[in-house]
Amino acid sequence: MDSPPEVAFFPLDGTWLALFGREELARDAQVSSEGGGFSPFSLAHNVASQQKVDEVIQQAAEAGAAITKSPQPTEWGGYAGYFKDPDGHLWEVAYNPHFWVGPKDSQK
Image 1 (cartoon, rainbow, N blue to C red):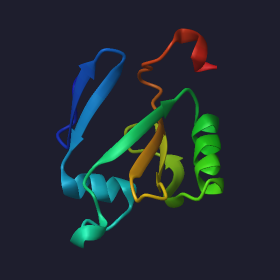
Image 2 (tube, one colour):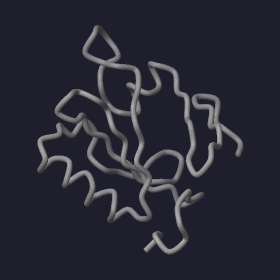
Image 3 (cartoon, helix red, strand yellow):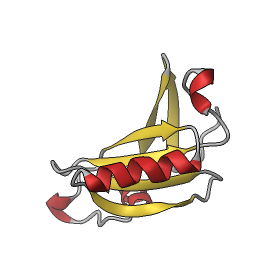
């Protein structure tokens, strides 16, 4: 898979590792990269549709997560949002119509 300049993708067994620069990740998550309040690390949960992104972000909010970026279309043609869990860890929930890394029957 070709990677844009701001991210490097590495295929793993059944998943992907994506490396962003600190500033790019902060910009994408709509959080400040300044100071100790930002851990330059996030986990991504890829789902099978835009509706699933909305559902997971809503579940996270109901469980006490702070939404940092409401679900919205991305510049790369997908749909994603971010939240911080109660421990302060940053999560991206994304739908990427260009590839899917899960069982074919779970794309519904």
